[in-house]
Image (cartoon, rainbow, N blue to C red; front, side):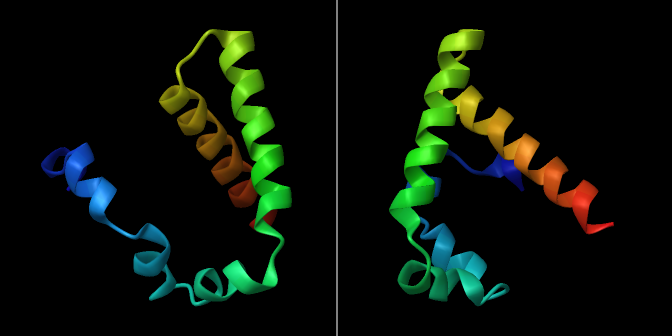
Length: 77
């Protein structure tokens, strides 16, 4: 499935809306969570990772996404 998509198609998808069908909290979080507070911290981590490891924006996002997933997975068990 990943191989059959491209950036143009992905840009048209509202991922929050798509995922909120399975996880309703994603539809509610926009009103209940101080998104900007968390977004600014994530942004700082992205920039720091880019500078420290000389990676591009996409790669820094993928690395942080993977770290977040592993943290969640390790803690839920």
